[in-house]
Image (cartoon, rainbow over all chains, first blue to last red; front, top):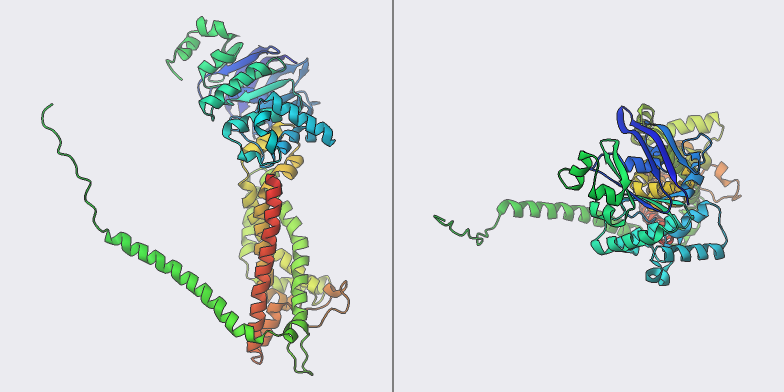
Length: 250
Length: 293
């Protein structure tokens, strides 16, 4: 359980100033939603929280992202350890082309767990945690690709949980899913926040309103407003936030 | 509302001549292709089959005994396939991994890819000449199966690299993100996710390479030589000169005395290629289903 504190984060893709001095305190055991129109930088911001932007050529980042007092962008940071602590679930369900079991065991294996008993335990608990166990317990060794989209996404959540992270980042985790699967994942998130800090990027404002405790509104690389979700949706301070959540643009 | 539009009829079906002509042409092209292929196969089967005998398959040729056998060439061909693939597959797959996963896109990579493409287009006899001089003379391997296998390695490398690259490129970026997002190191990700999912492509590369190895004669005339003796020692055999099936066939037919036996060799070659392709596909299927769980 960790809180994340971001201070004056600037990010450039080449000449493109994609994040402009973002500062935000993400509280532990809460769901923080990042909203804003396409291209506003919310996904980019999410990715800076576990350094997935490192994969992009020509990216330049300044400022601080502190988790438990340690800066993510410190030279001494081991990215493998960082990503064990801060897991990620992506927009499109991306299970690996291997069995359900091996998908969940993937992370623990990276971090050196080999004992079958231990892995069995982790796989079972993670699947239970992601509310998928009952649906797949008889076919753990079947291909993960045989699952439905919603099941695949819950599998990806289980996979992220298997390394016992403290924070789970979710990049529009339900945008590729049908309403029923979406509902299941939203319910899941509400139970997950008891154990994890969750940061979710979403296009869907109702979703942000339904599940999140805090909401941050982004616009062209700038964090316009941040506060308790209820306050943002009922009494936005900034005119731009109000225009966006009332559907005047975006 | 003023005037109403008259209802457009949908009952206007009429034959479209150009469609039919094109369809017929396409069927014709497909038919010609299949017929040609089947024709060649049947012709070789019919003319080759009568030459097959236990003696033909199980002995070495001997002028004294007036005997034409192909066992040494079969053995040499297998040696050639195994040695070439053992060297070229790791190098080729490694190069492809470097090019797709590690190298930064830029002028250097374009230069390498251009070189690879150029290498793929060079006539094989030029590889033979190079191999004879470099491996045969400079490295003093002479006419030997090794010399031939090294030459063939250079020849099939572009094929293996290109095909593997294509396979690696089809692995979805989301797999890479997923693995790296879990904290996997790059090599761990390649080993556990990228390579298993591109295995069918790599197997295809190997099958295509086997085809080239089995079918090659020009490059081997200069490098592997034309001796058709049974191996005296299985271990040192690669260091001695040895004709593959195609080389033996070349001599058999060009001397004009063994044209029928040439067809026999052709038939054996076809069977070998079919067997090896089948075997690799079975192996690949097993590996693939294992990867998919």
